Length: 105
Image (cartoon, rainbow, N blue to C red; front, side, top):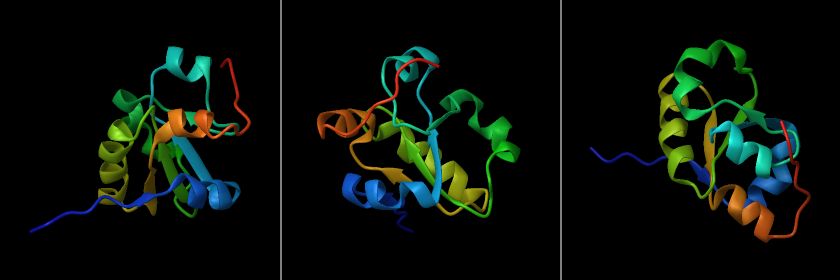
């Protein structure tokens, strides 16, 4: 049985992010250095115990540094019944694209 993690391109994410929730699964120090404006920090190790904090009616965009952690956490969210997708390229691609970046916590 094959499994495919839902993933969207940076361009798709940029177009639809305002209509959903962005969960950043990196650690606090990484998030403080640079993050997508409006992203909510929920470190990977805390996500499973904080599912009740996430809006189940919204599309959930999961982002990390490059896309590896976000894929694993997207799988967790999908298994829990969320409409979730990993953002390809992660925060690094967002920053490299020249888009606005948040800093600090």
